[in-house]
Image (cartoon, rainbow, N blue to C red; front, side, top):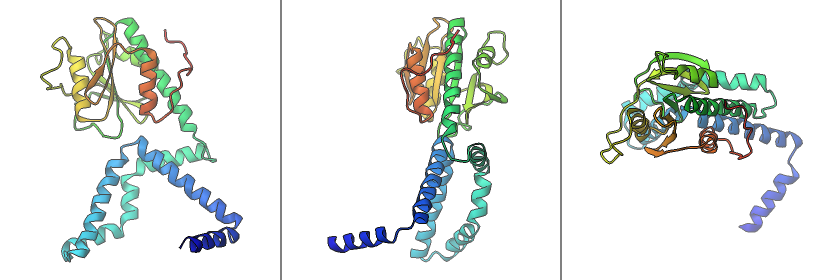
Length: 270
């Protein structure tokens, strides 16, 4: 068996063409980019749904569920069109990245780093000003069913914009900012309050809202207290109080799927 495997391997290597190597590299790059795109968006949920339907299709064949099998067969016969419709936003984003970066280098990593720095600067400057703030970073789980949306913005992230949103005279300062796909999706959002009876009774509404959302989703939430100008990081229903700049950056880098470096550019945080 081992000798046969070795012989087959030698045969493949001897007959391997340069075009075959290029072909494998291109396939690997495409698969890698698709996996990165899935990780950075909420598409994993839709893919899971398609996977469940695929399992149902197989079971319908084994169990001879003819009507159910006929429905799923019609569905999968139009799978290409369905995928294009479901993932049209993600496909447009991927094609835009390819068009702006035809050699497939990860230019989005630089863009994500800039977004991270703007969010970090916004959080720090908001705390320094003594403004209360709630900033939600959506991850894989879409949080539409868990929050009450405020004003839709679809704006580029900047520290100045975050600081102006949470200014006490801003009409949206009492709500949360939702960051989705690297943009400020909306502001003035209201989050579900935690019903955990063992929470510290001294925690305010912002902290309870941050904890409540992260108990139900995988979102990353930053909460700034206007009383003591402290910053909390909330994930998985757990509050990490008194966060410093390094803690904020590390949480953001991990959320965006990037490797955090302690010597990341400091920038002007004033």
